[in-house]
Image (cartoon, rainbow, N blue to C red; front, side, top):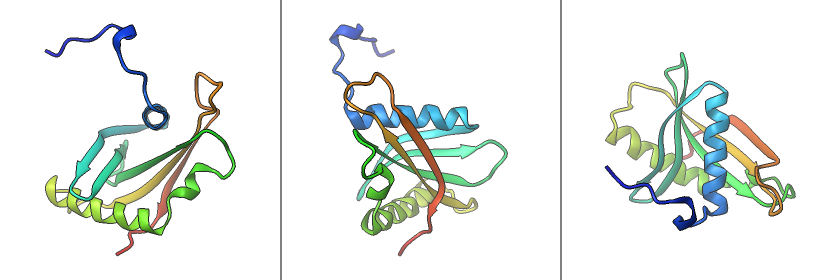
Length: 133
């Protein structure tokens, strides 16, 4: 068993890590089960893999965290990022034998200003984009 370090000895979480935790908690409260976090593949990383209860579809979730609302964090998931996530989802489907399940792409935008202990906004966009090849 891995020892748990006292809180004062742990490194503080980055903004992105805090945003991913907030996104995972938001999804859990919305009835999703988090299947995996930070899955690293050859071409990049998938932030979260989630599945809504009672649904066979697997959601590949990209989390974007920003300190301010302008522009919204979600707009940073551009065509290049969408193509990368599509390729990563194909690799994951092959590796974890998910070919029999529909895969969709969700985006979660998190706004977390410097002076706040928790995010001011967490917005989930199910099916934010279609697979791009």
